[in-house]
Length: 52
Image (cartoon, rainbow, N blue to C red; front, side):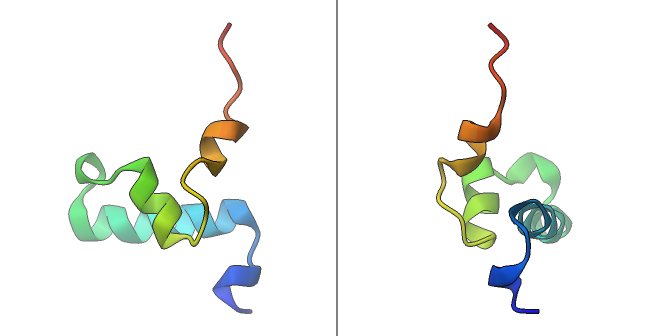
C-alpha cells in the first residue's frame, strides 16, 4: 500500500513515531508531523474537540 493511501490516523502515527525516534519528542512540532505525513498543517487542529 502506498503511504498516501493509508488512513490519516495511521499516516500521522507513523510520521510521529519516525520523527520522535530521529529528533526526540520534545523537538518535533505538530506541523512537522503533518508535513511528514503529507497532510495540511491545519488538519489535526480541526479534529481536536473543544474543551469549552
